[in-house]
Amino acid sequence: MKKLRKKPAKKATRRAGAGGDAGVGKAILNESGRLAKQALAEKDPQFTIPVRANSNTEWDEASRILRMGDRKQIRELFNLGQARKFMQTTLQQRGVLDLLEQDKTLSLRGMYYKGLHTIPGAKEKTFGDQDESDTVLQDLEVLLGALREELHVFAKKRGTMVGNITVRDAGDEINCRRMGTGGYAIPSICEPDVIEFVNCEADFVLHVEKDTVWSRFNEDRFWEKHNCILTEGSGQPPRGVRRLLQRLNAELGLPVICLLDCDPWGHHI
Image (cartoon, rainbow, N blue to C red):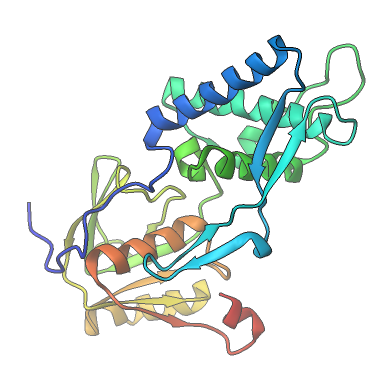
């Protein structure tokens, strides 16, 4: 195996928090056990969930990431305004545990359909639309202290990469120098246990906003002439692309240069 020309700045680790599949599963069982104890003690079962809002985030300069603040919200079963969301939270929590136990993954859309059914004895469905399901899964992330990818849930694949790097994707070695006109499709889950950097000769990463620009650069073999990695996220890049770019920068020390539209949307990206 060839060694990386760019040495990792620090050891690749999964996000501190739930601690991988076993940690997430344990966190779910702990939450379930806590709810059961509350019910058996004739207390109102409730979740305590960190508030997901800009006002409850703090910038950690040392790690250069946004962290959740200390504000919490209570989600109770015996509250008419919260009972439905409480039910949805326990339902999706059960769905995530199923995925972990079976060592399978599922898309956000798949999780919506997995939990969608008519509540017995009522005409009410568990979810009105996928947005409700997605919101609950985001709540589970902060409740369990885990990434969505650690819940074995992924979003729709979007994003492409080509250039002077070889990666190992779920055991398959991918040479991104030989990906033709289409490039390597960046997966939704880019954690170290899925995507491993095998060999990298690039000096930097050029991320472009639009796939049409990426296609032209790839056609001109810009990445070969300038010894770089060329990526695109088809507009606002999904989490998989953002995570991969973060890893390329943090682990391989590659600077990331972005080519975006000079407008508010480009600045947002």
